Length: 438
Ligand code: PHE
Image (tube, rainbow, N blue to C red; front, side):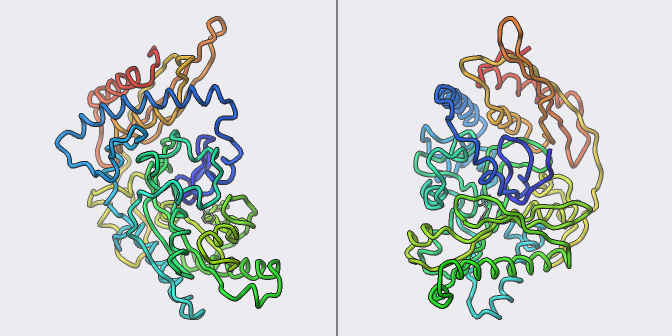
């Protein structure tokens, strides 16, 4: 498993970046077209549908007596947002100046404010947009194709048939441009259905940066020349930002692909003996700028994951820690200061395996399973690993075995309490996922 990326993790295919790693979903994952096998896709969708209904049923009993946010829990049949997840909305970790995510955000904003003072173009800074956005803003505006895998309800949380929990802060590019801002930073919580390990969490934080250059095209003589100038400004700005965070580290630019930028790049730095991807960026696709009402104006955009940066800079070993309210975590940080986290203890793990036969018609989607585990175990679940998989030679039935690793970051767990959780996981799996437990 590759280490944390910035804010874009690599969906399904493993690896990278939940911790802010945004890029993989829109780069490499892009080559996995949704529904390349239409029959299988229909089956997947149908099974997903059932799963969701079962899970919503149990989720609503969990939620009894709780005030659910009607903006998120619409009751629409496409809604697949678990209650445990929507409860994270409103925590706004990135707006707390003495939380590691807030500290990094403030530092980056400070850097861009200072830079703005030299360019004379003010930067609009936003960090309180609600995470429910339209499908148009999250995908269409950004030229993400209709069959792109990131639109699947297997990967994305739908609020209803028009809205999702934003999967990236790029969802705000078009509206901010449309309002007339020439330079802006938008930070917020973003949501993705994903695997479970120390760098992946279904909600994490991104910062988007955009700058457009009215008049530059005219001055530069040709679009090609203009794009070169925009690319240079983008790279200067971002290398400066990285130095403001990490000091004078070794850096390299890697060509990549995003539907919304061309050319597109990732910035990597050499830190703690390895190359680490820090952000995705590029020159904005002209069609996006044009549709936002800015004509042929040239511009750049970048997106970065705050958890990924914070895990490296503060040496925070597990993404769940960001959500901890334990004073032994929260009291270690103060506004404006990047400091090394000292782990208060590593409590012993407790693991449980679950093996089952997959229903050949319903199929099986790992993310549905991960969500059940998260729903039952919450932040006690450290990771879930596929330990065995085979197809029975005679019956042709598929078998899987997952290991659920439980570990609290705050106390020792007892085997008995974990048995209770694991039993509940098995029960919900049998009900919702149509598997035959072994
Ligand atoms: N939105 C992209 C992601 O989440 C990151 C990005 C933003 C890339 C802006 C280019 C420009 O992966």
